[in-house]
Length: 328
Image 1: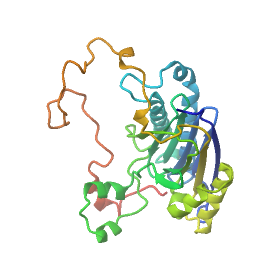
Image 2: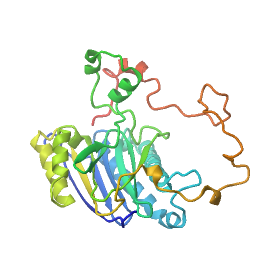
Image 3: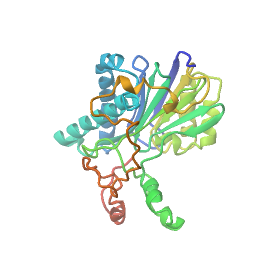
Image 4: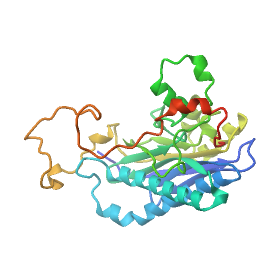
């Protein structure tokens, strides 16, 4: 059973102790059910432009798609939540806007931003999370803190592809390099996941200016306080500054006063019957039972896939020390 989904939200951002201007941006749109943190980069204040443009573009996209969203079913005929697709489309639209401005205006050339965004679907009680880069989403449920996103960082990509590398080699890798960001290229891969919201959940969207200096145990204690989301967000900013404030800080806290009574996988929320969406020529599960097809091994006639952001990663490792990189 799903109770009515009611949210409380609060956010805070700060320049920190070592930066001269704040390139982090927050978006709180309770009316749209949309929330995000963007962490800009690029130097000469262009990161500030990129993060603000990301927030405005995604907000505009959600505002422009309200009617079509209400008229569409909660799930498409493949059982995929339409809310997740809408959030991913908003990130991709923001990326195109940032790339266009970056290429058309010399003063904004080279700007980019990470983003972590969440939107909520009251009909299904689902929360959809999209992220690009190293801005994070955490969930506190029944006293247990869990990181729901995985950083798109150089270190993560290296560990995924070369787990046998010695720690001494890993220690020489730069720690502040992201492998995906809005503004890098017209092609962008957005990581998107959906979660069933449980009554009492608390979610934290934040930039690395908070998750870097403040340990997870302190984040959990702060999120577990009997305080409003706004009070908790302000307290989290204070914690980051107390630990030196090495970067801009952004924290957005969401408290769920409704949702599912028990935790269930997002795909356990029943979509409409597939026969409502079946088209002529669709696959009929009663007619055959195909084996698993592995792309690149089986001869499958599909559109050519795009390369991942980490393709060619190790060819570029030697250039990182001397090549240009964006400051974060």
